[in-house]
Image (tube, rainbow, N blue to C red):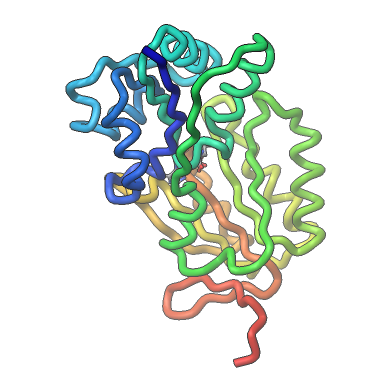
Length: 246
Ligand code: SAH
């Protein structure tokens, strides 16, 4: 029998934010591989399945396991949060296959990225050009992250920040904000969304100048959206105008 590997984006976490195609790919798989927290989010969907759970940081191991299982003839779902092609597992699987000169029956199933879920809770903050920047310097040198922040801030892009903080990197957000403040006023609206669509979801809107008060609650399940020079607030919503004449 021919195996198949589905690389499945499960969305930001809430069951209703997973696409029917993602659900179907998981249901039709014999084995589900993923980070423990994501498998927990899937609950009943994986209850009857063979599950291979790995801890954070085991990305290469997780992808190799999934490739091996699919190569052995099984239908395997490798689950990734949000969309699997955005800081997710899709690229890593393809890199591993390329390195080993292997081919596999493969399907990449897109998912709702966390920044879209976060934006929907804040209003319409990414209605104009935007940049997503991860503050994780595990795989990218911090100096390059700062240059990208500087470029995005200086060209007035709305800036989405992923991986804003972890225990080992407590001051990255503070340093990123310092770079952005070179170009953007303290009144710039900033949305802070923690655990979008998950239990305990938290949404706050502040300003670049007031963001410091929120540092303590920012963690690795938080996405920040920093407005551009035209972003405004109305009725509790954050809006970046598209530019229509109204
Ligand atoms: N593939 C994912 C991103 C993985 S990187 C996607 O398409 O969105 C992990 C980062 O995504 C986290 O550090 C956090 O910044 C963000 N994130 C993931 N899930 C989130 C959620 N439910 N709410 C807010 N941010 C989330």
